[in-house]
Amino acid sequence: MKTAEKVDLYREFSKEYAASRNPALVKVGPATYLSISGQGAPGSAAFTEAIGALYGVAFTVKMTRKFAGKRDYAVSKLEGLWPDFSSPIAMPDKSQWRWQIMIRTPRFVTQKEVAQAIAVQLKRGKSAEVQRVRLEPLEEGLCVQALHVGPYDNEGTTMAAMKSFAESEGLKLRGVHHDIYLSDPRRVAPAKLKTILRHPVERIAK
Amino acid sequence: MRAITLQDYKRRIGQVLAHIQEHLDGPLALDELAALACFSRYHFHRIFKGMVGESVKEYVRRLRLERAAGQLRRGSASVIEIALDAGYESHEAFTRSFKACFGAAPSQFRSIRRAQVDAVSSGVHYRPGKTIRHFKTLHRGGSMNVKIQQLKPMRVAFLRHVGPYGEVGATWDRLLTIMGKDGYLGGNTMLLGICHDDPEVTPPSKIRYDACVTVGDDFVPSGDIQVQTVSGGEYAMITHTGPYSNLGRTYAELLGQWVPRSGRELRDVPCFEVYLNDPQSTAPEDLLTDIYAPLQGQGRATRG
Image (cartoon, rainbow over the protein chains, first blue to last red):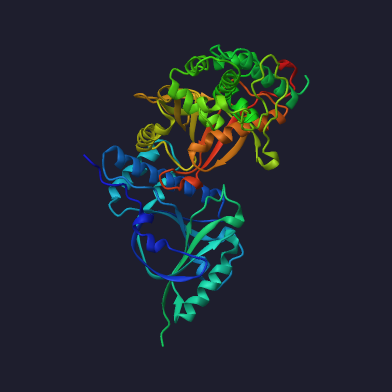
């Protein structure tokens, strides 16, 4: 018997992940994410521990389903929401940054499966952080999006171009700044890091 | 203790080159050749390939064909006699190999006055009655980014795959599914491959490969999943970028080009590789694999 083809969300929603250096508008439909939120500089102990907890749950959910013969899927790349990026106030103190790191997950994954995976992780003696991992929906709608190439600290330049592009289209930024990490920062030189930057937009009221 | 030099490596590999020419009709088993040059059987063929530019098998085949070419030009033996002499079981197989090497079929070759031998990077050709003393080594120059790393012993859970290297995916799939559902995979889990045999040397059906994931002391093996410890100590590490099918080239460069110039010797345990991205969601040209080659301790009197 032929099993259903493995789900790859990047292929399935390829239009939502299209990005070039020139900002463009994309429509992003409803999506589901495994996510965990916290506060602290990227790379800090809290941040790293949260990433470990998120992946632990993500792999356990996926492999438990696979073992049971349920529909298989590829674990998506890491993404992050950065609420403070969007405020007009500069936040030079990174230890104050709030974040929500996420892995997009197929909508057929259930809350029950996530709860079971968390229980298995705890049984394995993993950090209690895993209990903070959530399965949550996110619908961003119309967004401005661009590919940022270079260090994360330089995202501001690309963000500025996205903002002025949005304004030229009669739109303004709303909601929360969203990063989709295409490169592994442990492996790729800062100058070559590729990140999709996404920000929801809305019409400027006339 | 004197540090080992490139000249030492060249002398040892040179002995093998000479031995092969003098024993072209012998079995020329890899273990025997490795012992002759005092190299670990785990690493010998890669050191050879990296330094000489051909695998042992390719070198033996070429020398046998060059000897056959000489016999064709000078003697009156039949082509099939010469083919058998060169280790081929059929006229066709011999003709195919010969054509690939000399650009002409053996029968045509007889009437050509001068042999068209392609240049080989080592500069070594079959010369009856002459002892091979020198050969040119390949060198990728300073472009190899090798790091020396001190590793702690790593406890790993593993599944052994016996069969073609290209089919290890199924073994990985099974190992990751079982380990994953039991909650053993997380952000810091490392995925290692230990290849006990070289895909370029061992027949595909006999290659032994261990698909491994790092585990803590609490892991209890069950079913056919076993546990082993990857030895700690110093390793030379290089990152291979690209498809797994090209790993052999990077292994040969590390072991046959970098190591002989490093002043170091390899330890008698297998190399291992660490997979940094997921082949199911990564384009083959973007795959990253760290190759670790075990080094002997340096300059300790206890090792003299």
